[in-house]
Length: 149
Length: 359
Image (tube, rainbow over all chains, first blue to last red; front, top):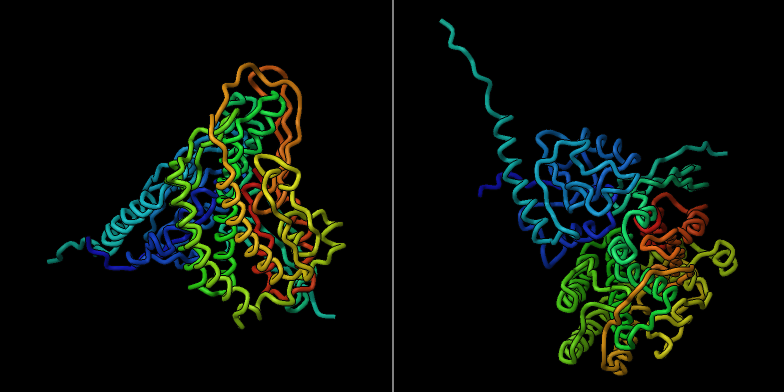
């Protein structure tokens, strides 16, 4: 796989129980270390290429998630980490949970698990890197021109 | 008078792994007031007791928060056990105690890492989390999970630790303790770390009492209160004293938490020496009827579980008062008068757990 660019990652805790959040952070620390793929955790949406969301969407955070997504530059990839981000998980029946992240954003990659294991998260991030490359190529392709005369 | 301005802080912020929003009212660089707005992580899981039966609800209780997941599960189980008058086997109580203390070590190491990250000491953050991974490996060996174990059930625990496993754990704890001593020297003696932690965010003993703070945040202000002393699980058999400090600033809170990790190592050793043989669970029949308040000392402080049952398989009410909720008024008080640049550290030194608070 050719990683031509070092993708930066933004993590937001939707309404998760923290379990997936600390596993996302664990990915960045010595044992798992996603930095070897060039991935850096950033706090600034305008620097980010990959948007990792843990936890489901509720009434209060739907706008926050949407706003962060809109601030990110194109191309961007959304990764839903953990079963709650995929479809609501154990909290699906709660009155305040609207559902998974795909209720408000187009999700590219789903990482299952409760809590999602670091290996699974890294796998999701590596897939996101490939997808990012693909999206970038598509965006960079020159527009088709008609030959004149 | 300097003009006042309002700086929004959060919900998405580099130092916050979890969302909380504060409106900071500033006079120049000085914080005059902090107005919180919470609810970004609210799920409404207390109401799930109406949809999941009381055995199944253990899984929900464990997911109140992923950091103290074991203790949430245990607090709920012990509350229901007391309503149903179930006698938990002694071995199960000891196993619960050992896992509790391991959770405390993992939580405090996690917090030390986040604190280091907040004052910009990246390698200290990495070292703390490297050490924490060892505890997670032990969790995985003994329960099968890294973060959420599902090892508690009403009437006991699901997994046992044999003598060999305990012995290997004790050897690993010895190693960890040595490494932690080196790490704690940097946290407590390093010049740069000291300059960020000392003399900021004072909370006096009176304030700590009046604002109803709990846990290390309270103990760092000189109040020696530890819910473990009330005696649940196997704690009545173990010998320990609450760890306190008289100073009440950010440094004192760091100091108290580091000493608590060493205390946890000691408690695990004591428990491993005294653990009796026998069953790890008893069968539970029938439905609970009655109510109970259960108090548990979590890494962040005292958590209260109120369970009200009505004799059917669904509970009437389950209510959790989490430590961060009790600590928020104290935190807002310490924020008054501090510099804007110190705000992240002050928020972190109460060890906030937002997903507990908002449930």
